[in-house]
Length: 290
Ligand code: AMP
Image (cartoon, rainbow, N blue to C red; front, side):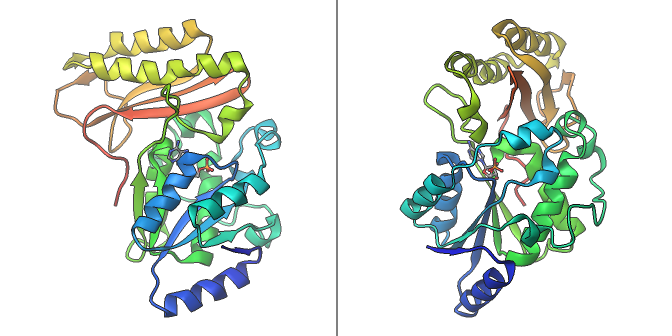
């Protein structure tokens, strides 16, 4: 594996590989890697890509400064995991490689309603920060395939929109990969390691609640099902930001299901200071695969 810290070095290396005919598969991350991240590397390798993984904890996407400060950094074990997975290139930039002009919004991305609902509503500015960093990374890497996890369902939709807004839609294909879970159902997440032993146990309620919604989904009014899900999380000790049974393509909440519409259930909730998100497609829909 080659480790590069400078954008120009990465650009040059990728260009040389592209000339050799290798398609470029890109996996952007914030590190503290777990098997969910590694599954994206494996997906890229199985599609014969030169795998380029970036690790950068992006300050502009943290609406809560203490969440940024507490974000786990485990670079040595990350590198060991990437080596074991056979990753080809690791991009590990410092702040000024990503924000050469300093941290300031250079442009506003028109994300429409995605920015005002669910994560957009509860984390103001978050998706602008995601777009800023992903746009910069795409400019540097210029991948053929971009690998994203369905764990961040709305983020997949935002990045799909970003690719349209930035004119990359003809050149970059998004591959959305399934959410990897622990044996007890908890979605793997870098934030899980911040949970106390007790909260780690309680955290399994999220997947149980999503599964409950899936099992009890029937055509008609969904209000009671939604309320039961919120009540189950609250009773377990969560501070719930939202539970939403949403249209799988638009994320509009669905309150009265016709039995046909593709749906996804999404949750964001705090245990103590740790905010967890998860989702479960209720029908056959897959997030914003392009
Ligand atoms: P992050 O490091 O949290 O920014 O995540 C980097 C990428 O890994 C994103 O595309 C995430 O959606 C994806 N990812 C995070 N957790 C999982 C998981 N449990 N299963 C699959 N992909 C994941």
